Length: 125
Image (cartoon, rainbow, N blue to C red; front, side, top):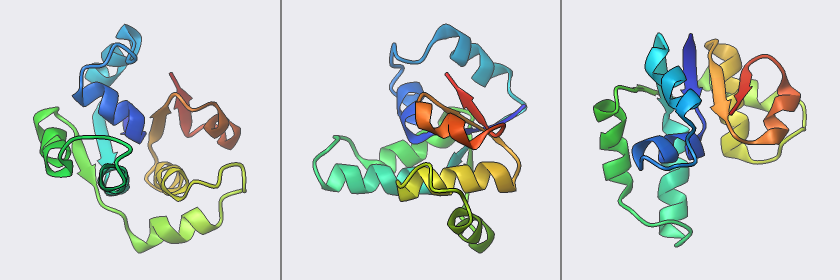
């Protein structure tokens, strides 16, 4: 299975949070490939700058490779696809992750209930 991590799942994984279940950890380990979107790093950078979280965004960027994940760039096709998604969710970072999941195709791994409204590309943990 090819996966894309939601930003909070990335953070939980990198920080070894207890919020990431054993089943999800096994799923990540068993996946064919696990991607982290450049938009997640942008979201982390913005939240860090606003004081909503702490840490160095560059450290989170470095942790992608050391965690065995692959970086997924944001393309013009992803951005255009985000504009065509139904309005179930207004957060621009989330919409971009969903668009990437549909375009690549990947399964978006998230704990966010609302994303389930988008159907098969979303795997709620």
